[in-house]
Image (tube, rainbow, N blue to C red; front, top):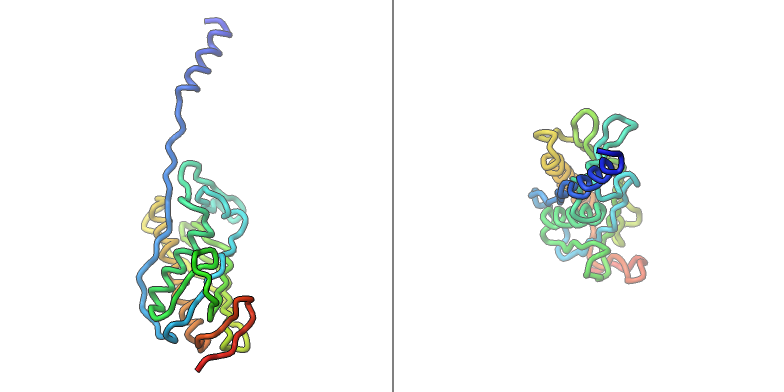
Length: 206
């Protein structure tokens, strides 16, 4: 076979080859213990901030402290920050059943009594095989003169290195984070009537 014929054959084989179909994954809420809170308070969960290396469709693993691995055919089913926010909101609603929890990007736009901000610094499987979540959380309410902030460092060992198990472990850590956030809200002593529509603190109702 001459060179042109060989190249044509390679081109035809490449054209017939197909990339693997991507597999999509989603986070899910985890059941938790209900905590006491003021009845009827509205909690707005602000959009979660992610580190830039996690803001992509591929699922990221940390090979070493400095090296990242991307799973090309294993992807998130939606933008990760949106999934984290929606999952946290569902987790919080289970733990604060007498409250109304919604995200700032959702359809509900009622003035909140509490605003929760979450910044994730780490949310992946690391080189040791552990799955880690490192986050800073701020809780603001009109009922308290000062905001409450807390840092969370959580980790767990997935059942295996399979992506489905890693995603399940990440969901578990979000459930643990929501328990910490619920406790922060309870300690804040929140009452209804926290914020006005413009974001200013409203007067407390009795």
